[in-house]
View 1 (cartoon, rainbow, N blue to C red):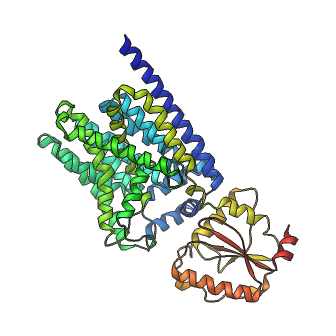
View 2: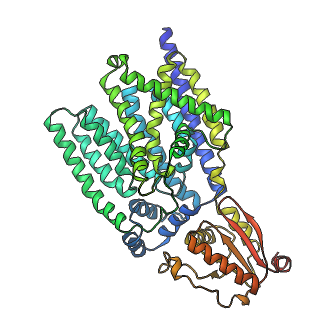
View 3: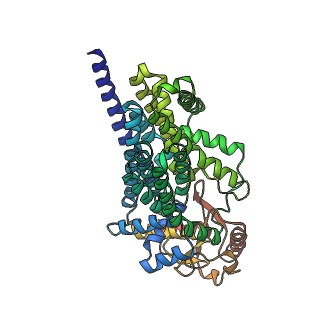
Length: 500
């Protein structure tokens, strides 16, 4: 009777912890993201889905084949509303659905305790939460990885042939949600090879992967041939990049207290070490085969993509922490298993400790607010009337301004320099930009937006600024954040006073 009471109390505590973590993700994710506003990559997304269907398909065919399925689905979704909150809801639905399909195999093979702790880690993890509401394709990619995982467990562990159909469909569509889903397919496929029994199961494995590769190969070839330098800002990763990624995986945000960051990393290392020891150690023979299969597969999906991209990046840099978001939950499965097994007699104690530690780390995460456009746009819009112009040399900056012109009550419809973005010139390279600004002296003031730019555009911006200061007036910084600096050039006091 005592054990039944204990089990019931644990279930109640775990269910309460999961509910609290979910509400935390819902509230914190949306309030902070909406306060920050869209950032550069999100601005690009809003631009794509604002195009008509012919233009969107033309863009994907020429420039942006990766995440094509995401753009198509989000465009359909935006038919209801183009507002920022509505676009973020799409990502959060995919994020929550991914949690469900990740949870189901964990609950079945590892038990309700591990599954409950996993969900708490998932919904309170600062980095997962950032991309859980972002207007980008990472949540959708995670959903397809989760579907692959759900189908893989039924096909490989339970040997049910129907799941191979789901597996093939999830992989076939998933690679078009994000190219890196292919790494998840590769990791699960390799692990499955060591667990298959009989020629029949091997045949199903083979044909499922043939279908996925047939869908993936044209996309991979297109991306390799059409590489447009979008990853040019990445550098060759070293040991430091792996250390930073280990903190990220553990849920330790860079802005949280050092003691908390180290504690979270230590907890993750000890818990995952405990889990893997139980799999390969002498006690592994006592564990069910399904339990070991789930842990080995989780380890492969969380680590293999990192190893592969790290090795490739020594030749062609492509290593960015955000690319591993769809695989991060599998590490949390291992951590949850290790925590529960190491503290089996105190499972109820794990819940508040994990919630507090992860919650404080997430609340401390300020980097997500340091690169948004919303406050930048609103503050500029207060002074944008009169004979003024805007100088923006990067397409993602113009897309952000255009988005808020369309969706906020305030607007700033000033002429764009050196030219206004359109469908035909969106991906115009710096070599085609005008060398000089014509008739710039006609304006009484110019708002200048300095953002991340390649060397060529940065050199052009410096030249443009010299012309503006000579023809219009001195430039003075008015506002900015970690990624954006806003200057006003002209007779600042006179012009801004008139606009106010």
